[in-house]
Image 1 (cartoon, rainbow, N blue to C red):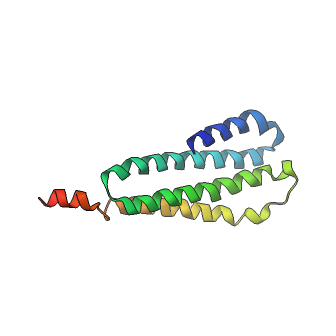
Image 2: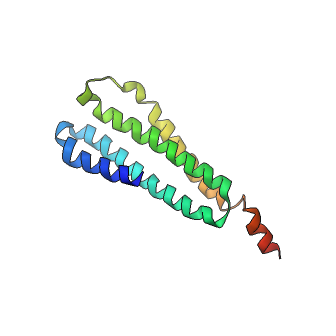
Image 3: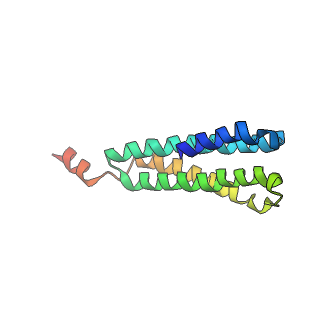
Length: 127
């Protein structure tokens, strides 16, 4: 995801910026930013998984990934709509679903701090 964020961002800045109007490029830029932020969140979640509390963290990583696909993916498609000459306005409702997945991912990350300890961790602290 990180590789794709950088590659798509560079492609957009150097390859397609001249083809997009400023509003479309702003949409594209938002998609890249949110993809990159949530890629960092996935990396953070992966690191935390080594300390237990795995099921909520698994949900968080899953929601972040789905959010990237729905939110950033729909924004990428809509920003390219004029170039590929397709009406992709039907993707408009997909974007908020991706945003909802981002929110759910952050909620799961928060909840992971309060619950769902890994059994080994709990057994060691009980001794």
